[in-house]
Image 1 (tube, one colour):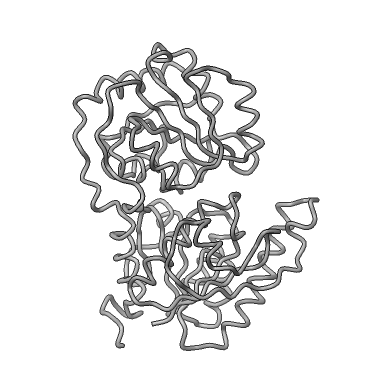
Image 2 (tube, rainbow, N blue to C red; image 1 turned 30 degrees about the vertical axis):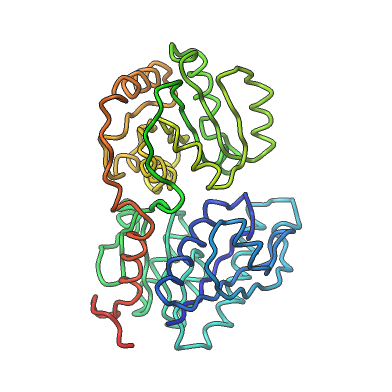
Amino acid sequence: MKITYITYQGIPSFNTYAYGICTFSTIKYLVRNQYEVDLVFPFREKNATTDLKVLQDFYEMYEDFQIKATKHLLPFGRVKLLEKYMYLFSHIVWSFYISQKYSKKKDITIFTLSDWVFYFLSKKNINVIYECHDLTKIRKKLIARAIKSQNSKIICINRYIMEDLFLKEGQNVLIQENGYDEEIFKKSVKKEDKIKIIYSGNLQRFGKGRGVEEIIGYFLDSEHLNSSELHIFGGPEEYANNLRSDYKNENIFIHGHSKRTELAKVLASSHIGILTNVESDHSQRHTSPVKYYEYLGCNMTVLATNSLAHKELPIQNSIYYFDLEDKKSFSGALDSAIKNLKNKEIVDASRLTLKYRMDNVIRFIEARPEGLEPSTP
């Protein structure tokens, strides 16, 4: 079976690295399940390439697939004025162009992270699966129209996305959380020396901090400062460099961007992972953070900001919650997490792996529109 994966994200790019990991992890398991995969994306980035080996090394995914990149002569990335609107305009125009091209191929299946591609192809009644990671007002309207098509399906990464779309799980709607790559992130026995506390992820979202500076400040005032280490992984690099300049302490390490294999080595010897975000609909309702699954895959305890989406995550007894604006709340969560490290049980993460996730996604892809029976070869 053949699948065309269409995405508007920058490839390769650290700016969209999390979405890139999602894309290439999905392709990895599609190929392993005997799918022929074409990856379609625009040359948005200056370093965009069709060199398969470069992309495999960047995303640490080594299965073979076809690359069918397109030109990108649109203003986003070229015009710095009103970037948000330039992005939207460019995304719509490119999605319309690429959808027109693939709407002529009636016997194909499309997998996409683009709401506009989903909308335009649904209007043509093409077999299209959209994986939704976040909602906006425009996206809600596009999905409401697109999902009416008999051949359109949507994967929601948590139940709040489904509920906010007024959908119900069934033949064309799947709730499927994220997962971790068990080939990279592995369990290990934690050493009894200094406790390692990790934050991993983007340090900003849409130009705004994600609470990392608050976490560093709380850690500096913590009674665990001298017996623990705080490691921060993520970019943008300029932001990471500023953190290095502003916070100088022998127990605080600002690493910037890191490949997953490099991060996995650190997580293997780490004890506590942090999930934090600022107030927004996305952080409150529409997230299923991959880092959470990677933390659990490495048998770590988790400190998480107190949000609805985080409380939907599996294996809640591994999480200690805190309020980002409250130092006392953070200190209490950290104290409890450290005190219970010795009694921590190894988590059964078999249902949190990418393989488990993609087995469910593939069954959903192959199901007929009228039900969940496998499609005829």
